[in-house]
Length: 486
Ligand code: LFR
Image 1 (cartoon, rainbow, N blue to C red):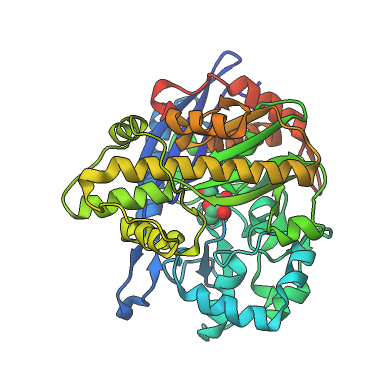
Image 2 (image 1 turned 60 degrees about the vertical axis):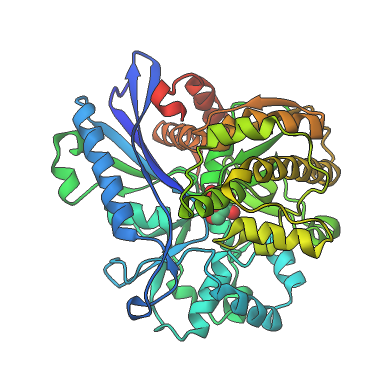
């Protein structure tokens, strides 16, 4: 048995994490070695403008994390895998070097791009071809925005986790689970969809080669590889989509469970063997994203902790720093609010001034606005949590209908699974037995896929098999050290 360590990198819209898995005999121990905050920022026009991620800050933070891992893992590091939020991408030159900071999917340039594209390609047709929830954040609309802005042609793009892998020496690829979220992959063929590329005026030659989850993409090279621990380290594309990794990290068996991957977004759904892309799921805009083990993440993006985090940022900018634990505790003491929010109102997906946005919706729907000041934060938190729980219940009902599954259990994973108040409201609203999974479920799934890949348990076309991944994920339950439990 190889006794060397492995590293999982998980890129989040709010924070990025580098975790180390080491072996105590046959027992894996996972340590969160480095975590640093992340956020997009508005660039000045002379630097290209737009809401963009700070790529060099991200890379710097990750490499600092890798160095810390190298210092700890005297036994050496066998493999590194990277997952992250989907849809955003880096434009690279012929040598693979980044050409600009990547746009954040919340940038408003895609409003126009969506309108333009839906005139060229019928939304129903794109649904039929891809099985993907039409959302203007998807890579397709962003790439189309680039085309409308007449960005020089011929530039290759790489989704963010795959870019990081390539920067460290990996081949330039598009991992399948992550690629499905671009809205450019044909559902039944598992290949880039020529018809959509052409409708959106995109060059297929600029899209990277598709590979399945659990593909070895190369060896770590460059300055990091000079560290003794990184002398012979393999780079693995896990399920590069953080949500697919998080679901792979749930060690549940049976057919009676649903999931919520709860973070900035809440992904509410279930794992299926076959996609559901008939009239009703399409009309209701459910997604069929790639999952580990040739399965499908059948779910819907529901607005998540974004709502409360954006409120907290607003109050912080006015001088009051609320801490989330205190805020949840204060919200829990309040009575159930009367008029719930439509949490998926497109206006509430935009950044800044969230209390004001929420009130604008209330007024539009004939409800009294709330006092927007920081001292009234608990009322906002309560409104948000009750509204999210109600929305989860509604979405799960529809998923049960479309999938034909009778749910008994609900696994809540991801950072916000620590919000026990929201979990209780969710249990009440859904009537399901709620299990709190790992807060770092994406990291667990990332490691589980890596380990399955390293032992060679994979199919050439669909990637790692579900069974060994579930076995590794089960073994990792309890492997997260206190620091890694979030
Ligand atoms: C979660 C997530 C969602 C995706 C959204 C944008 O972090 O990856 O699955 O819809 O972020 O990438």
